[in-house]
Image (cartoon, rainbow, N blue to C red; front, side, top):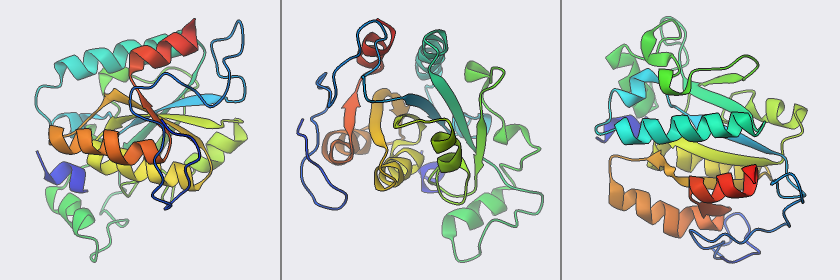
Length: 226
């Protein structure tokens, strides 16, 4: 996976190149429902991408990030927002790693991310609570060859709140997949992280705003919890 190899305007459409909602805007496409904090037409789920031991271990200066993602995750639980964990993992022997996929070949060479290995486990900062689904993926996007879409639709989820690691990898692929599947997409900029801070900023400013909205976790909690 590439992410492990390297240390507002409405009316957007997939592949149109039209600008999306500007980064940091607190404007929403739907009104906030009084007394709930939720946007009236949306049922959200907080998606935690690859916040797992084997990915955190390959990053530097993660203490502040982990503190913030832990705090926001708990606040979302308190607000009764659905939490879904997505981790990268493989069966013994890595049968899901196709030899023509360079990223998958690297994972197999490392001997990492086996389902029964610590590297594939959710990081303690966001340990699972009872009833929180965990989805295991074998590619970069959380939707490719997983049951994430089935879980979301079965739970009536209409909006995915995307967080996690890495901005230029799992976050990017999952944002594009979610938009193509017609979910409303919100990316929490400060709860994503990349080895390359400049690339992180370009994606947040220029790419993700074409698929949905990009806001801070503080802004999201205000509209969700108040």
